[in-house]
Length: 130
Image (cartoon, rainbow, N blue to C red):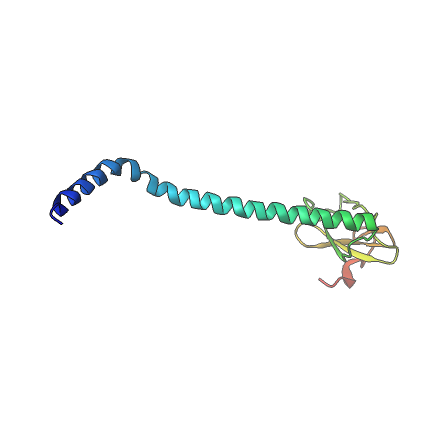
């Protein structure tokens, strides 16, 4: 206990010498933690996408089509001069699928594997459950 002041002074000197190295690391610790959290989230998303791909492939190989009663046309807004002509394959002959544009407006339906557009056939969208 006789050298307590000298040891304290030596540790304070070492701390002063180490500060230029340690002070810039403090903000980087938060950035590192954020990047690790982001990396973990991306890994989880990749795993989820891989599982969905496996499920989709298994459904495709089994010949089971997913059930849907609504289809949304991306990058299309209702226009009476432009028929979107969606793909009608993959739906059952007795299924009725309502088709919406990107704004959520009913533009027609697929019934009996036939595309019925609301601008050619009247009252097509009156029975939708929107």
